[in-house]
Length: 217
Image (cartoon, rainbow, N blue to C red):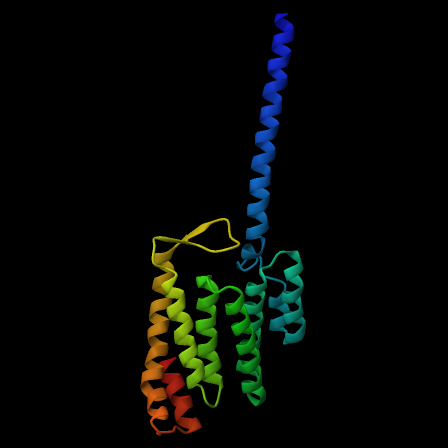
């Protein structure tokens, strides 16, 4: 009888241990699925599009990003990354700079529309539209849009931490705010420096805009 009881207890302990291990394993599998692509942006494991972009194979790099959506990369993150590739292309291709900048703008808008509560996506849109403004003949609407996205990102960072939809972890807000605020301030300076003057009928030559862009960043 004692042996039978001990056997049942042993089976019960084994079952409970198995359930716990499966649960823990499932948790970490979910964590791994989320962090898989976050880890790809580290120096040790760059995402696959980086090498393609370095080689000037921009369309292949963009396709590599879009393909990773099927493997778990969030669509908004993919669109934000595609926008950055277009901006990098705009930086190097002077003859078609504005064309690529506008392509970037369309992806930035799409990313922000897909993830309006994600401060990281909005921060990327702020920086992206700042660059679009630098690369555009009439950049003021883009700078003003950048300010709007920056302010929207800060509005999501009121508590000590922020939880982003689709992520299993929370992030401390203070370092994010400290990163956004000085860049947002510089973009506001651009708007103050010439966008309001332009709206009052004072136009700037392309050379002057280029000079201001270099000075104000």
